[in-house]
Each structure stands twice: as structure tokens, then as C-alpha cells.
Length: 356
Image (cartoon, rainbow, N blue to C red; front, side, top):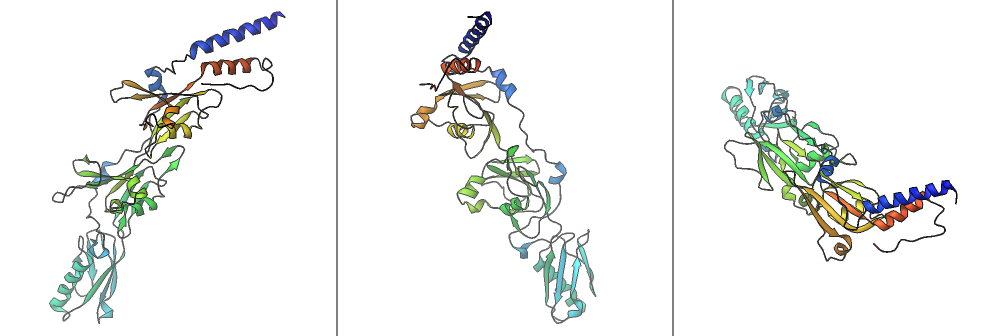
């Protein structure tokens, strides 16, 4: 054997020794500091401008006849039997309109039926006997709703007429489902709190976004998959619809495609491993450690076996945001794999790794 071959063999032996030393059978180990370093800060659009919450404006009811008129709305006014008095007028910034004979009339905050009554009183006082007046809102302009977070087209939208939560999500392009960001399982409706109105948020977890607002949390799984249509709430002027981004878990070790997976739809361990391409056919084993960080930074480790989970002998663990799933790698398989890579001619023909 030549000196060059002897040196190469020594390198292989040293490499195998290092691999065997670093791949014990007790399962993978990662120091908590490494876990923290691996977890990038989640990109979540949770910054909402305070001035949006302070926008004045009445709530929009389910019926257009209950709608409360505001600045920039266009009204169509018809006076029965008096076509010369019919008008289309836009509400000005002070919430008033100007009509023939009666002059300036305040309409801000009034529904179309109430405007009809006010106009009938104004015309009937001096100009017409028993006037019959009809008012329609031809263009809705003053209603604005902000849609933020994990939607395709976040921004502020003018709401034409009455709209529901799902309709506004559709206007914003629907829920985001891209590699760089996926929508979570809930939607937050942040709404100005009425001083005398009832408390909101009975549909889910509820908590104030500020002292002047409250948050209604809608479970999208119940709404979209279970048909809980009562969660498809009417949206009001000034509402903020925020769709949080899904959290991420990280699948490392003996899988085909290590990386991050979105924690949504109650993601479980087996689903996360499947999204990571499944077990690596050469190196992967069924031993799994799940490293989880508490809010105080303390790390805990959950150990399980995929074989037992698939056999329903162990629970399929539900993953949480920032969990790190480390799928074990067989030390023997890894050593033989490295050996083959270093000495591709040392093993001829087909070969098979048996057992985990």
C-alpha cells in the first residue's frame, strides 16, 4: 500500500471516529442557546397606527336602510309628484346637504328613513302639502376599514354598503399562503368600544387592544371549515381587521428537507415531519426530540417515537410557535454514509442499511 493510500485511510478512520462520537444512540442534543440562535424573529404585521382607532364614525348596520349617512355619501332624493325637486346631492364635510326651497339640512348620523322624515317636515312646514319623499344612498364614501397582516393586499378600503368579515377579507385579496408568510387560524376585529353599548367579543378570546377599543377574535377554522356562519360578523366603519401570521416550527435532523413549517390548522408532529419531506431514507430514525422554549426562556424537551405515534401508542404532539423538532440520525448509518462518500470505491455494488 502506498503512503498516499495509508494517509487517506487514516483520514477516513479519523472522520468515522468523529462521526461516531458525535452521533450517540441516546438521541440528538442541542444546547438551548443554539435553539434560541436558530429561531429568527417572526415577521408579523402587528403595528397598527393609533390614529386609525380614533377615526370618528357610526357603526354600519346589517341593512342599508339602517345605514347612518356621513360625509361624502351621495344621496338620491325623490319627491313624489314634484320631479323638479328631485336631486342627487353629496353630503359635505359638515354632514349637511343643500336642497331647493328648504336650503341646508343636516343629515350626518341619520338613516335614510330618518332623513326622509326630516325632509318631509321641512317641505311640509311651508312649501308642500303632505309631501312624500324617498331617500336612497347611491354612493357610500365615508366608510373605511383597515385590513392588515397576512392578506394579499393589506391596506385601507372604502366599504360600499354593508359588508361582512369574509367579504372584506376577499376585497383584501384573501388570506396569505406564501412561503414567506402564511395566515394563522384566527382573525382579530379591532373595534371602537361604545361607551353605552354591550361588550363585544363573545365569539372567542376577547381582550382590549386599547382603553378605547376591544378585540373580537374569530376562529377561522370554525367559520370556514365547520360552517359557523354566526362568526361572519357585519363590519363597521373604523374597524381594523387584522390577520396574524402563523407561527413557525423548525424541523431539523434526519428529514429530507430541513427547515421551517407554518404552525396552523393545529399542526401535529407527524404533519410537520411530512411537510419536511418525511424521514431521510438513509439517515433518519424514528427518535424525535421536540425542544420548546417557555416565555421565561427555559427550554424543555419532549421525547417521542414516530413509530409509536403512527401506531397510536403515543400522542401525536401538537406543535407550538417556535418549537424545534429534531429528528434523530442513526450513528451507524451516518458513519457508513460518510465512509462511502470519502471512499466511493470502497463499497461496490448495491448496499442497504438495515434497522434503526
